[in-house]
Image (cartoon, rainbow, N blue to C red; front, side, top):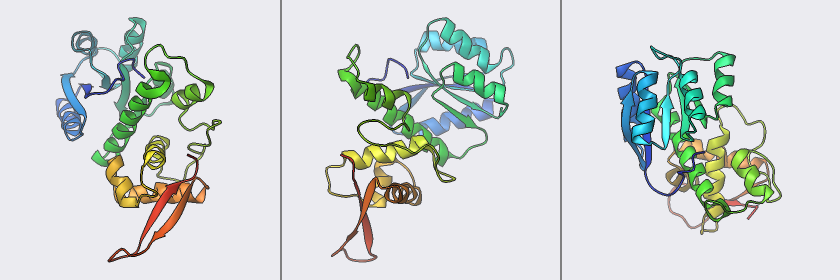
Length: 243
């Protein structure tokens, strides 16, 4: 995660060889609150120059570029000392490509084609992790405890503060989105939150939020409480159990 994780708008560089796809991803970024596209590049060499000139916080990086592979762009960025955050956005599914991306320290890997809903979920989870990084340890240079390091490097790991995401999730659930739901639920000033309230704060669909909340309840990390006295359809409230 980039050292520029301070509060503010996430500045995004889109890199894709196909102008139509690049335009689509640029439009996706434009729908997100707290994100702004600051540039578009269609070649690897142009992407490297754009990172140097524009200083983005996040690069959406395609692998199949006309001059050099995206994995080479990533390697060049790291060799040059850049700590810019990178999300690989590609149709490439080969194991060696995924491994090369992971070794380059990418923060996520999205396989094309993907929906705006999935893109939004991943970007909201990324933004939440940036905020956590900015707050952990009291800012740049702050000393971290082991639990702080574990939460930053392994969002799904168990720490002394209690379990986060389990190692294996039901089909359709992601660890990053689960982390976002957990952060919203555990930091809520209210005694409990409904699925709709969690969905609104996480920027995801209500049905998706309910699935994550039900998973937390089933794994003993959240309690479900019927809300009485509310007009209309009965509603459940969910409360975090590990404060």
